[in-house]
Image 1 (cartoon, rainbow, N blue to C red):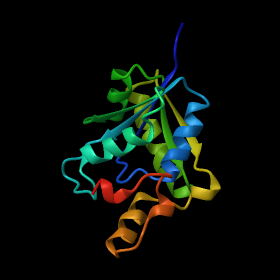
Image 2 (cartoon, helix red, strand yellow):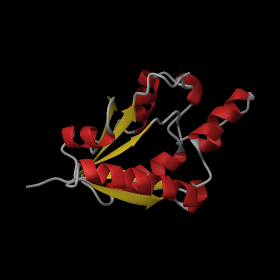
Image 3 (cartoon, rainbow, N blue to C red):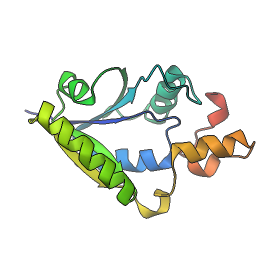
Length: 157
């Protein structure tokens, strides 16, 4: 029996309710979702990459259909290494769409057997961006409404 696997790549700094909504939607389509945390060593983030991985693993601890991996290199190569048939990308607005369409074209040239599936971020959480969460935190405000329920960002800082 064949299982469909999709990867959901990103920096996830931090993983938000918007990301969670996209994983939930992807699980309605695919048997397994591998959340791939891209390790861009030249980019300093809010959370150390190991903390990002731990946050997501804590969130999905009871769901064997979700795995979390850190990767370097090209996303298409990571998808191939995970035996994925698809790359999940979230789209909040037309700006996201234009960017993701360009990325899809590149990935398709390199890995024509792996499709990109664009999922629209659901309206209630479509305004949430990791960069916004980082900015709100920088000003000492709480970000609980942006984070998945039960996740206290302070635990991972």
